[in-house]
Length: 446
Ligand code: GAP
Image: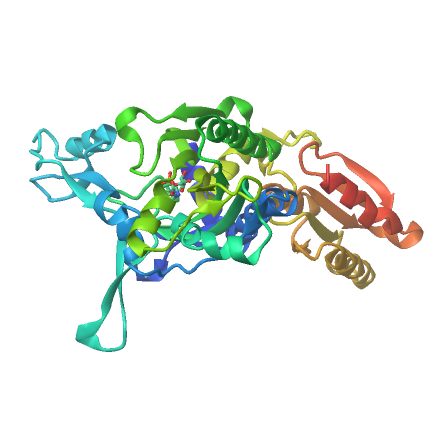
């Protein structure tokens, strides 16, 4: 099994990620997050929001509608230019991206010996269309947003008028985006429905100023991924080449991960110049300029954008955390799978076990500790397991990344102590129940 196959299997088996609408044969490029996947994704989004909004005084948040007036997408250039080059195999009529030669080669090899001819490359627009309205033949065409970004820019004036922000400042947003990808694939990596976490940072329209903030945000975003345990050797920046940049970008650098399917982008940092505000000003007729409070000068700000994919981050955090090793504490050196997720991202922070499920006094005590910890960690669930033997329970928690397991045993009933077992070292320490919450909080906040 390849590493990606192992991650796909683990995701299904333990409830991280399921194929979308699976019982009906699925729907290409859609995925459903299970009980553990939703926790992982929520943790990523919560940490993003904490560091980008709560811990700064120059960024505010927004949550704009997915459906927008279609004029937005004409103004933003997406109707015209948000497209990939598409070619069609003349033998089986399957369609591929012309700019992905590996995919084309892979497909050609499926026609055993018969080299297919391909149609001329043509532009294929990625916006997903929907119909809105209650009268059948008068329904209006709308688009599901192709990037979450435009919901921020069309609200630039609303945010200015309703808050005390002053340039330089940013607006952060997290939400779903939709793209009619020609070839979804590599698990969730290229999906047709996915989530983005973005910052649009408005600065004075001067080259030096926007460059300074561009470098600042590049460094901040890389630091953020490193702070949650991504392996430094597996991360790099890559600048887009001249013909590769999106229509709105003056400059674009991707943060890439060395994945099982090659170096792949999971966050883009873009200098959008004044593209968005000037286009919306032109198409809506609304003045989108900012007036500097000190000099009284009016200008259209430049925008530095950081645009990350929540699903790609979740996938690369899973891949980055996946280890197969021998349990150092077992004399047999039994093999185990362990997800060394950063504690802040792990779906469960702690699991609680009674040593034996058929001893009511152990179960009762363990339940009371479970409730105590649940009350102290309201932002994340506590796991409970009383099935099978204790070693199997530890391994089951290792496999989903739970950093600590607390076991209630017979000694607990004598001296009110429990063991805490560490996922990564598998070492156990015995601590007083009354110190448990504080101790775990300290460990988890490291
Ligand atoms: N607002 C700018 C923007 O949308 P992008 O580079 O097209 O820029 C940003 O997308 C991020 O969104 C990507 O780095 C990736 O993480 C995520 N993303 C884009 N297309 C995706 C897809 N089809 N499936 C999953 N994630 C995707």
